[in-house]
Image (cartoon, rainbow, N blue to C red):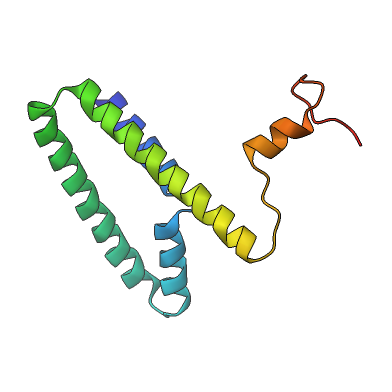
Length: 119
């Protein structure tokens, strides 16, 4: 039980560092002179979101095999990641920034050794 608690804490702590939630908390705290209230509110929100996730995970695992849940979660993260990359590419192109793609990198490697060819 202690190992599960520790691994869950480390996983969530590392996942939350630098994400949108933390940036929102920094922003709210920066516009307030009551960091304790910001901490309490954000802590409660994270606890509630975690409770919903744990309850949903527990309920789903009794109905759907674990392998299927993991596959669905992996597919969801892959879709979200792909959409974020595509959105970043569109934003970069709109701003006039050259965004290298896998095809561009492969074509730059004319000797196929995995390293870009020097000009």
